[in-house]
Image (tube, rainbow, N blue to C red):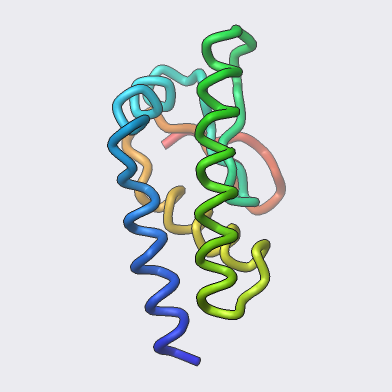
Length: 108
C-alpha cells in the first residue's frame, strides 16, 4: 500500500507543476482571487469572467489527472483529489487562500 501512496504523491507533485497554467494560477492565488478547496479543486474567490475561466480550466485539468492517477493506482478519484488538496495547500505561498478543516477560508 505504501508504494501506491508514494506513487500517487509523486504524480500529484507533477500535477501541481503544470506549466501551461502555473503562472496565471500563481498570480490569481497570491492576489486572493483563487483559493484551494479541501476537495482538491480550485475556487474563484473573486467573480470575474477571467477568473471563472481560469478556475474552470485548472479544475478540468485536475479532474482529468485525478482520474488518470485513480485508474493507474486503483484508488477512488475523491481519495486522489483529497491527497492532492493536502499537497497543494501545504505548498501555498504567502497570500494564498485555502479552506481549513471546517471549510472556512484562511490566508497563508
